[in-house]
Length: 499
Image (cartoon, rainbow, N blue to C red; front, side, top):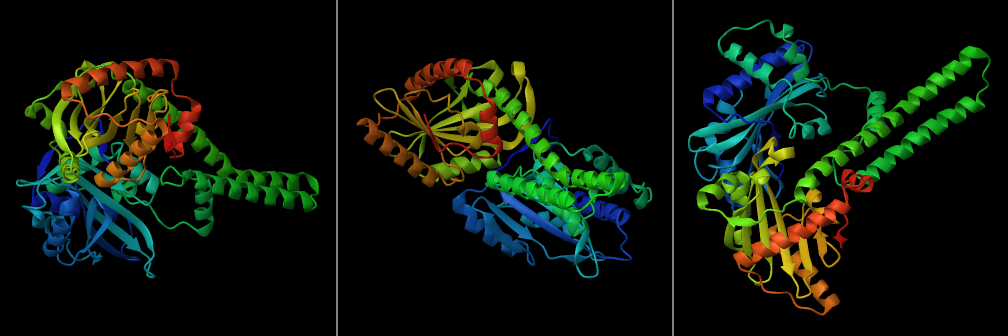
């Protein structure tokens, strides 16, 4: 589940009136950005819920259907339930409080909620020509809806994904404008600069769409390599065809030759932009990986027990509660809660659990901030970023480690020569990840002729963890992040098995 990253969050308890005002203000901005006399227009409300245990999915979905009548309830993935309202004409009011007041009480208390309000201008044929979505992200609770952050989304999937990790540039302007709107102090809607930025136009020609497809780097999705190669091949084919035509068609004089040069330049621009984005992304990922892995590889602090008050800072949030419930349902049993005794890493708590077989240790770390250099905080994380790693020891001091996380999974220097790591991307069910880890252990046992060792007590595990962390630090000092590592991460591919 994707967490939100911001330099800071400002939790605010929002009432039904606050949500109504936000919706009215968004429609007012919409009027300033579009010409409703020449286009049809409508608005739609959507609520996305996360943070419930998988065992409660049916109950959450059924209750959502009952509470939000007229909404279509779907499950886009096992950890998300979405309620989408029908498109409503612009002269009709949206649901009171954008439907949030109907979600008071169990089973919704404590869940993460994206409340999305979209206004769309359409041609008479129904094709959208401008649209903007206001996203209110927060937590449902007994007292109501607590807003943590807000942003606007448009038509670009890459920009929408970027919004999860970067503050909305217009957030302060939007908050100030909303306060003035509620106070009755309004400028002419068409004069509001925020309106045009909030509702990007969606009416490109087929030529512009083709150019954008050729030029846009595939930052998202699981098949980035395939899509990148496809775009490179298409770009090269277009340029080669244009060059062949320019070569074959007789050119007479300076003007004709210059027109050929201009044509080839225009056709080559998408290829240049695509390659620029690729190399820029490669540099960005390498810089990020170097900074983050320097922290990961230098976990030299030892695990120390943490009491309930300390550990609740990291796990008492929608994602932390959900993951604990799911792993408990899968049969694991907690044997210790801990934090790292390291002053620069006070942003994460660790829960250690045993699987029922007695030789798998489930290490679940919940981070509430991204650490920066020198013990500083680079970004806050809400609700939390939960990282799960499964560990099993063998008598020859080798270790089988399993995770499903792309960034933390690709640590080929971490494991050392005597260890095996497996990355199972896309495996999110605890029972499935446990089964995948057990299979990795079986294969390692067959290869070495050794049987797994029983799981350690907390004190023994803490000593083993500290020794392994020291080894990891030495490995990293001699094997920093390379350009090839950055390429692997940028293309979304990790080796499923590495030593």
